[in-house]
Length: 425
Image (tube, rainbow, N blue to C red):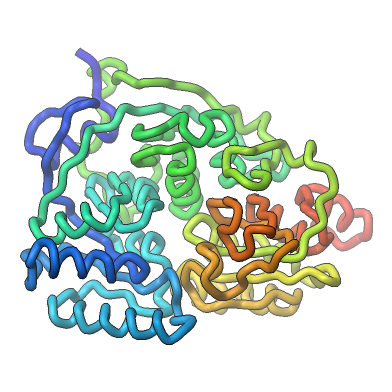
């Protein structure tokens, strides 16, 4: 008898029976997340199509204002005001208003996403919750409305692609580079409706795990789960979630190994996330904007990594650097340890916690002809503003090196230059 994948273990528990990949299950999600951009559609479906005035389980609902926060225009402000009224009418207590941060980051910080839970969200990057071994997945407005109305949802148990990670990060490579390397291998559709399941990363922080689980979507995955080994005590792992080593090998659709010792910094080149190359192959690409933030790389540790490289220096003339924290908690930590002061002294502009310009609606959108090095998860044409702008994806360390030099730059180059100048690393 084969063992079970993490997805099969979690979904079996929720379904009340043993399930395997390919089966369709009906279950009760632990949390249903709705954010400001999709909420108007969800509320309209509830009222006009499902004729639901009162939610049966408001205690299972989390609402966040994060995609356009604060509101950028009158129409958005009015839509958010209506959302606040609906939240109050429904008695939803888990409400994260403007400034609290991106839903994915906040749900993990608040322990609403935790090992073994099922969290569905009205945002495609709800795969993020797999960072703490929750089964997180995104759904459209209709499916979210149905889950809110009934307290239940359905899904097909995904097949699993197992990724075994060996070695140590070296030569300027970081978790974002690992995420890009996986997308590079699988391509944009190689993991369609699968669960990517990472093993061998017990030493990674929750933030680094979130980078990986968030980016799982960019290979088409339904979920992105990190083996819970090594999670901090704030995220206790239930006994039933432990895999049974005596049960045999689970049935994986695919399994491969990535050696971190051999990995170098990766860059996603315009205009698709899976158009990934080694940074060393890119050549010198000048940039206008460096953008550090989003649910993928907007945490305190990401800002701190950039600040460590920028300390005592100034960003290159002609470059604008935007830093948008993923949450208020991340912002507070950056204030407390001086990270924020270092970034500001280097010339960065700080935005309020939230999604920022990731979806191209406010707070740093790109003009025609501009080039951006972005620590986010997508570089589609028009994603951050003008369809004539160009977006490269890289790690926070690459972002800092790029801000200093004015071109997409390997962080090792900056470190070597610093040592030669007697500045230290």
